[in-house]
Length: 464
Image (tube, rainbow, N blue to C red; front, side):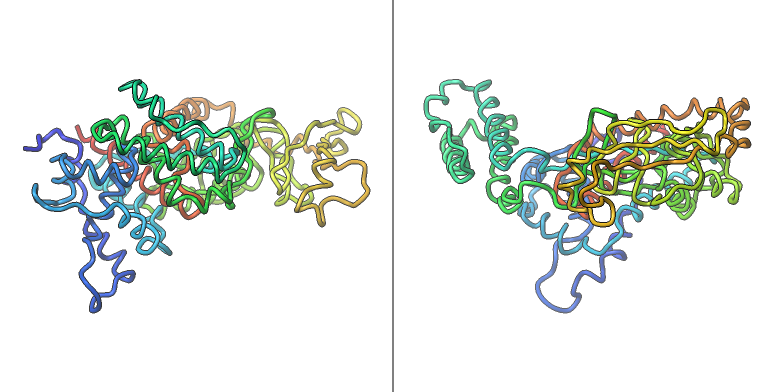
């Protein structure tokens, strides 16, 4: 029934999922209580979510009638499906305290090496940002947005239902918006046939999930782990960063999930070490200017790794005070403090031509400093300005500057575009543009499933 070229059949034949038993056995009781649902099946449900970008309820619903899903889940055609709430429990109870991100990446890299797919000894590094689920919107705005999407979906099918909808909420009270959403759900569900259509059911389930399961998070209105990160001098995001290492064959070999304000370059050494642990032999690292700071150049030299990353004078200026508290943002060309606030201007001081005496001074918005929760030890009460200075050492990186001019450097630098396409695939095909839950742990789980999915799909494509 399931053709040989079906992706789910190919994944089933390619991957031996029995490693799930070994990794999860400590989270199950073997001699007490009723038998648990097969953990491999539960894991595969989460994998299907990452592949098809559907809610828990919709992925379970589709597994009732889609034979390729049943085959992938190792279910008989007439077998009953799980309750969608079981997936939430599986994520929270069975996958907790488990380094799933590294485990799944290592499994795919091991598989790619076994199949002879990875031939290169180079990794390309970059970071991609993911917006927090409870982004800068208020709880009421989140509910309004999701109820609006549901109404629009219904209008496209049957605009006559509009007359039965409750009057829209006009107050600013969260309780009133919740009451409106509950009435809207009741009206839609009372229509019977309409709400069974997939185009209606998906936004309906999302609204129901928001009203019920996520009510506590809506009252918080923001993700407590998420932080402000900067894409450029005048654009920012609220959420997380995933720092990725990938081979030239486009297989991801390592990933580190951090909060949004973290500096890209600081994760390089971890990405190289994780790639080696996964089985990669690394002799070249390709990245942008964010990775060319002094510590990384020294580390690369000590470990006989060629660092193909262009020097940026503002990043690679040697010694500076409070190095861990102020990080350089390559896109904006400014420093960012530990609270995530970016400098608003910079000025160069000292005599021109005498590099060691010159400094770049970055000035911060003192009004933000006065109100900042992390101002202790950083901002002096009553000060009229807050600045951060970096000394310039123009001859510090002579060797790296010479390497930049070689043909090898220029050829390898052209490979960097590949990781941009991989970031786009994660975001636009596997829902990695917005977090599906709150918290760093939830973001790591989402990253693990999304990266495992894109790696397996890439291996299947290269095997053809």
